View (cartoon, rainbow, N blue to C red):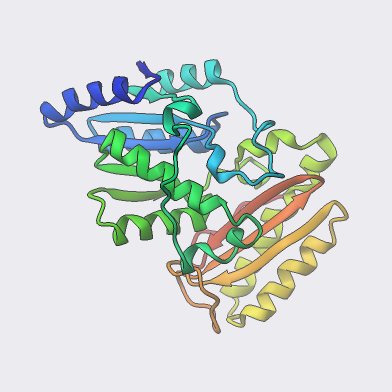
Amino acid sequence: MIIAKTIEEARDQIWKWKAEGLTIGLCPTMGYLHEGHLSLCKASIADNDKTVASIFVNPMQFGPKEDLTKYPRDLERDTRLLEEEGVDMVFVPEPEEMYADDFCTFVDMTVVSEGLCGKSRPVMFRGVCTVLTKLINIIYPNRMYMGKKDAQQLAVVQRMVRDLNFNLEVIGCPTIREEDGLAKSSRNSYLNPEERKAARVLSRSLRMAQETILAGQSNPASVIALIKTVLLNEPLAEIDYVEIVDGLSMQPVDQIHAGDLIAIAVRIGTTRLIDNFTVGDPLIESAV
């Protein structure tokens, strides 16, 4: 597996592959990999001739009071896992490689990025769109793979690619969960044992919402109230948001239909966790 630390190193290899007519899949990550990240790589390897994974903790998408400095990192472990998976190249730039001291160009968005996580993390999606634009221009992928757990991020990137006419396909891959239903996340490592047990309430609340929608409930307010009731029964849970939105525009809906997104963000202790499902998805297997 090739480990490229600079843009020049990455591009030199990319152009060789392009000259051979090979297709390239990109799996952008911030590292500290888990089965969710590796599922993106599996999908890319199945679809493309070559797969590139990037590992970059992007400072631009962290606010001043967020967890940039303590975000978990283990590059040696990550590269070993990617090589075992069969990834062809990992791109691991330092921040100064991606952002010059006088960097002043950004990719921003309205509407899709403004609700949900965009409310409490207002700089996040500008950072995501900017860094992914740079990665697309460095790697020139045919396809890019992202997890559906970060559903708003996926919708933002799909809209950006459409609006700016990038020549690639953005593919959403299913959320990977622990046996007790908790969605895989690098931030799960922040949880102590008591908090880890409490975190099961996220998937449990969504499972109950799925069941009530399957039973015929289509009123967003009623489903939101149900989810909040379940979450607030957990003493360690503090709700950031519970919302039901159109799965493409991320705008609130008056009635629930297939394709709508039910999304939650909850703090367990000091750790902010997100989870969601799309109406029509298979039932979440969650602990009770």
